[in-house]
Image 1 (cartoon, helix red, strand yellow):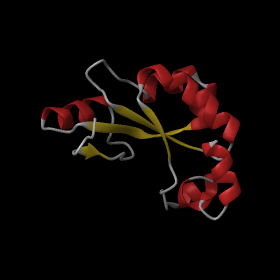
Image 2 (cartoon, rainbow, N blue to C red; image 1 turned 90 degrees about the horizontal axis):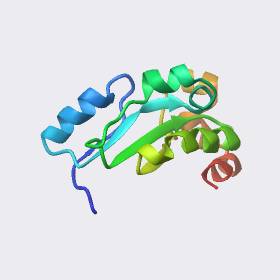
Image 3 (cartoon, helix red, strand yellow; image 1 turned 135 degrees about the horizontal axis):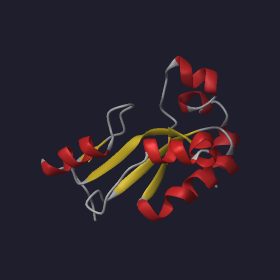
Image 4 (tube, rainbow, N blue to C red; image 1 turned 90 degrees about the vertical axis):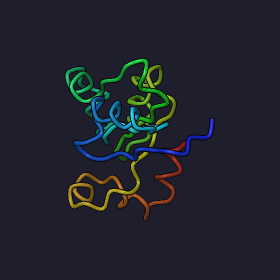
Length: 118
């Protein structure tokens, strides 16, 4: 389809309950909050705590941050059957993103971004 009404990812706001509320009022595509790819890949407790969905929560894009192409791909594999796409956070301008080497701070490293996307 071609969704017109999209609920963009918001840190600590885009959890399942909020996404379902936005869908009730016409949202056609929703994003999860940003999740850290390394923690998502390595920690089952992190996945269970931060990634919840249900059959009515579709289409759904899962957003990850990180700077390691292999880790990003492995994190995406954990979510691939429960989402419609994976979004790479390249927009976060916060200091924590600079410190963690993700978000908008990766935009200056074109080769790394291309590697993550591949």
